[in-house]
Image (cartoon, rainbow, N blue to C red; front, side):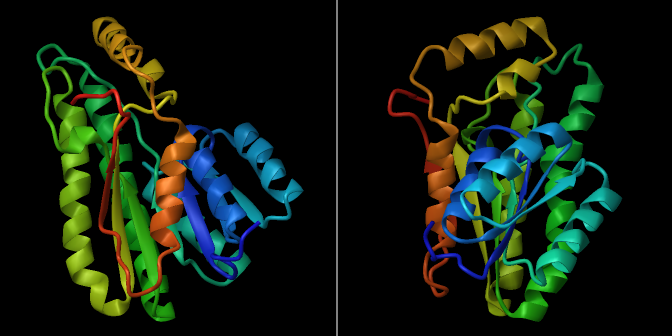
Length: 249
């Protein structure tokens, strides 16, 4: 355990697997108390045990970020338990690829509700607390897909571009309140994301793309997040774009 984040409190959404799980472990290792949120409570409990076994402080919260009331409750539970919220990692996301024509539009709604609105709800809920504290850090997980649009990824691209625009506007609104904003844009990471694609052709293509290079590990992204949030207060790491060495686009 390090003490770089000693006394700090972090919320990590989508913490039941992948980047969220790795980030919760990384921030706890830096000394932060961590609230871990996701829909799969069994996985959260397993993660919580790993954190407490190493001496960390953790709160598990079963929540769907697409539900604003659940998000507000997540933030209030964290504040009630630990007395503050210093870091919010908006990690929860889904990647339901496929062509625009003939798409299952429920996939679109799910991506917008989780990737965009969920992130916005959580940000909206923590801002008053961070402003009252006079300090805070919001980390939004985007993607290389927030920079480069491709065929058959249009709506996912749209959600991640929205994250970029929202993050930059947010930064300009809150920097005078000593609140930092960081956007993380991973390339191919070995996570569950492609397994959830509902379009069979898009899923096959995505799995082929992921299988064509050595992917990043979730821990690689967690390390980037930990780097950003452990910088001195006068340093705001606004953006980190991180790809596998072998990934061209």
